[in-house]
Length: 122
Length: 261
Image (tube, rainbow over the protein chains, first blue to last red):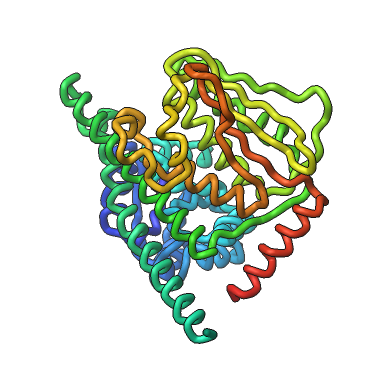
């Protein structure tokens, strides 16, 4: 069973994606802020990371940067899942840092997020 | 005078931040509602009867409209506060950009049984100065509008050179726009008072935003005069790369960015 690490601070969103990912057969681990996300990414060896940008304690861009610096997490696929409020620079930076995909929460269905996860797991 | 200016700038910043926070706060629950509706419709929570499916579909359409409205208002708050960033390039091939977009637009058009035509110009056009993403946003807005209001027939994207400007046009075989509505087309919420908005599901913000964006890039957007019942044709111009107008616009935007810092 593939393990997804979901780094997201909004409880409504966490509950929904947790439900969907679990329903579709993933093992889900949740981190509620950037620091916890980074720590879980290092400790729990997830197969893929779904990362928000606007996060408490450490922004998603910073988390991504640190993940890519660390040899143990460097090769983990990261999907950014965010709301439109982030700046264009944030998005460009995530692309530069090697995020596989940048998805807007209001634009994608939970099924499409799962489809993307499957795409990058193979 | 100086202090009045800085007062009003401060007010703009506060207003801008307020709208930005409010729209983020609105968007999160809306994304959740939309997500759950999609999950229910996909049968993730068990089989769905046709009646329930119809109701869920209506709810989904409503929440999607709400999301568009909030996104539009955020765009407007950024534009009006001068906080929308423009990454101008002076070598934009508008025909090529439209071609890249064409496939996804064709798919949407064929779902509505409309044909979409891309008329490539006979002579090669000069390159335009524009922000590519913004050009695409405006083109999608115009083609999207044409699709909403055209019941059958076709939508045509065409190009022309007019002096120092490159003009992109979107014409359709729809009902056309009544004379009395034409003067208000590019105003905020111009659709809101009409019955069409309920049919089209539009926010009434698209053309206002498009006008703002195009004018910022030194161009104009207009409705071409047409005979009654022959559909409508929207056109927008962009200064050609390297022209006097293009240089002036680039310098202005740069100056605005500087005062922003």
